[in-house]
Length: 464
Image (cartoon, rainbow, N blue to C red; front, side, top):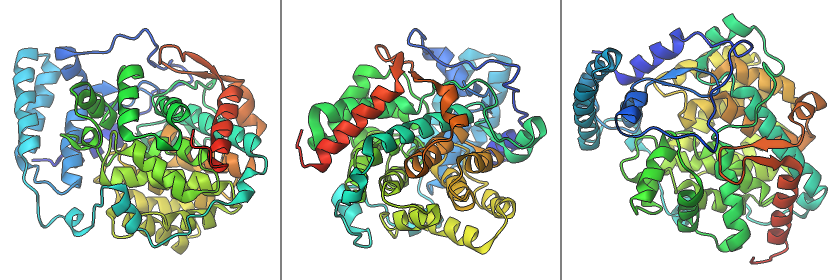
């Protein structure tokens, strides 16, 4: 019997990229009617990533993720090949029953006490997370105010360029990407800014503008209910919980197999842009946001993304940045151990291809949307990219995985730090498109000015 991670790994290694130079994306719009009932079950047994067409099986990924979190998944894994056969046959009645059995097996799974996951600490409340950090300096750096609006604009441009670049590639593996595209050093297609990453940051800005530094996870969760019609993986579970009245932090933990995935890590950059040069505040905001949909290591991923962004305003070397930001993680967590291990790997190798081969094998049991292999790709990109956006994005394309999320993070950091080359910014124009009602078309320049204004009010101590 194959383990869930083996099923997913084989799917990833064998998936040939849909050539986006020929085929269009299938992104949502504000008019999209999202699936429910049998249609949703069928999609979760055989989905396609909207931007790239990559295949995935969310029910397999649930089991895989629970195994990563130290649970005994043998009872659930027995059901996976049955569900895959029923889905292929289109037997919806039988598939509905089998899916109920699978979910019951997932939720009833006992802890595997021998699993490495349980050898680490998992602080949850912000005070406990902060206490587990190695006492970093929490003071604001006034240098962050220099050119704040321009640097924030470059942060947004870098993020949206990275997301637009990566959305055509996400969900595929290194070798398969190279077979179709070769070495990638620019946009594969005309850039599309629509994706499911940035919408959560836009909602956070709305709440922050209303509540300021006093915003809560509950405030954010309720605004998700108001604005966001559909999510994927951890966000899908969180939205389901929120609409059932299960509010943060339980919305991120209750029956959420994906709580260590990249969904929080992919959106932490806005917290850093709201706290430029103020890493402890960036981490605090990221924790408030992260627990809406994630827990433990998934939340720590957002802390790292936020602190990387905040420190990019006052650092000039990506390698120093990576190491300094690691000090703002709970040090006995598995996430901190992963970051430390990735840094050890890149320090030990001069060749990024060799380093990535080691990191890819190290994280082969994790899903391509999990926080760990993707932060490994981010670290590889920033370490070997030399601060150059094109080189850094090319490294992310080589790594594969969740390329739009990863390039969004790396693009934000490098945009703030060094600006955005014209080849990446000009094709974007001044347009951000989303599937949120009322936010279908936004000005990137106005978004950046708003972000900088809110950040400035915070830095000056304005409680609103």
